Length: 211
Image (tube, rainbow, N blue to C red; front, side, top):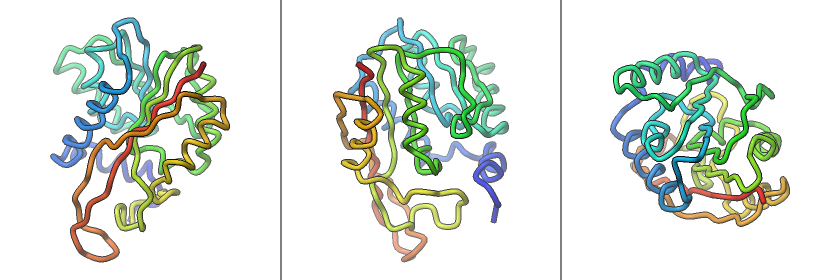
């Protein structure tokens, strides 16, 4: 068992893009596209970009994407994709926002998928998102609905067993966000590590605006 999430993600990077994760990323990208009015004038940031599955999907509809992650190996995999596909508007950057490492840029959109449950202090991260957004900017955060812990098994640094949507809405409101809205984004079917049975785990997308 890996000791930290960073070690786990670094070790998993080259084999990360499994069919289940690719389908999930496409569903989340579709949910963002259907919920947020994307435009070629928008500068965006993806928090916890991993191998860039969602950034690669959304980049054609955006001016730029700063793809940030704490895993060097995940970013290296994304850099390979950028070179192979000749993508010019995705900028990978090694940053750990949870530790207060912030970019100097400001954004019209910050999006994230399946990263928030690895953040111990969610409220501080949401405050940093608010700080990094331009007025009128939006966040779009996808993550698991509250579950029993069987989704991740022994993966390290899982600080939240999914989220109650209303509690996350309240946290966003408390940091100054408004127009908060949640929608269903995807269903993941996989073995529950606690029961050994294949079960459904629901993923939501919550969006909010910095007025």
